[in-house]
Length: 135
Image 1 (tube, rainbow, N blue to C red):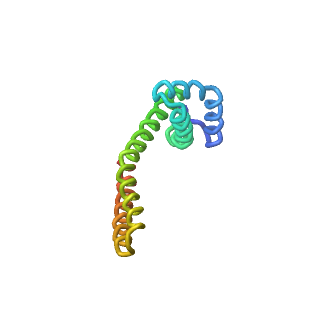
Image 2: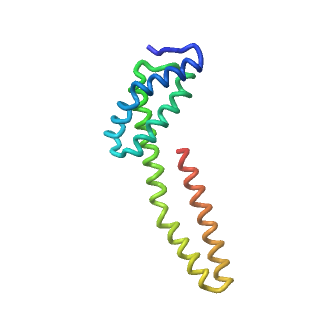
Image 3: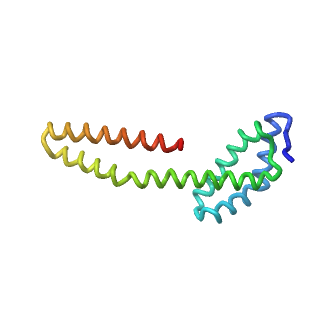
């Protein structure tokens, strides 16, 4: 059974009460699932923030703690995926930065060409990261 509180104030009060009562359990479950304290804490807070928005529109789930753990787990997975995409692009970025450093030691024409090439690559990397966030 989904509970539908009367107003946004009721939702906030319910979420605050749920935070006080269940946040330690949600956090410990997320730590066990993702094996990272910082990631679990971030995911838990994102889950509570998501609850504020979703519960107003959809109503309060039957088991709020389970909903928070599930949402937190998905938030952690999303963060791990973003981190993986960023980490995989770091070597390319490091190569471009070393090219720029080498160009600074070269003449002004070579420096200009390298900086233009690196700028285009950085724009492409940013666009790729931005596009992959919405997949």
